[in-house]
Image (cartoon, rainbow, N blue to C red; front, side, top):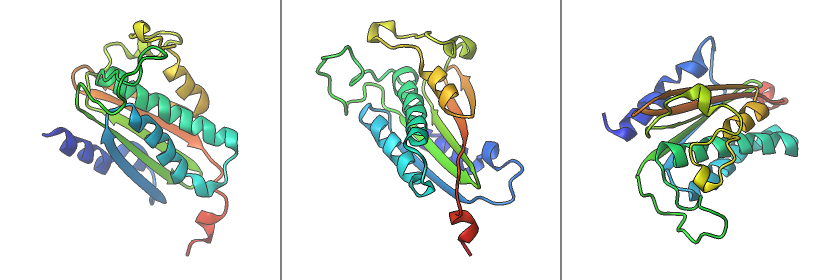
Length: 187
């Protein structure tokens, strides 16, 4: 199965989101190239998706940061596309992908729960437990802090990571949000 077909099949299944739900309220999916330019695109896309919720700036920053960390991990660790993530001051092009690949982000708002899934079909994670340890980084030469999963865990209510070496990684996050009356008022 081609990579894009596999990604589309994953979103169609969405079993992790739909378990026990009677209906979906709102869903969006984007698939983008695994390049550093698209980290900011993913942050802005999720911000636009939740913009009607009237979140606090802190809540919005938490969601955007968690998405940024998940997408950065997919680009740097999943596909090893380092352009744009070098040492400070490096002049590397941000739109070049040494290892072409796609990152898929699916967002679902169900009542007051925001579900976000970020996945890649890159190299996968050998040891998830080790990768999730604070300050652990497999790329110290890039001045990576090793705090990506720690930030995701701190800023979201739930974090789940699945990975298979050679097949890719999926990061699932949930955050309770105050959806307000826009859902109740729709008729």
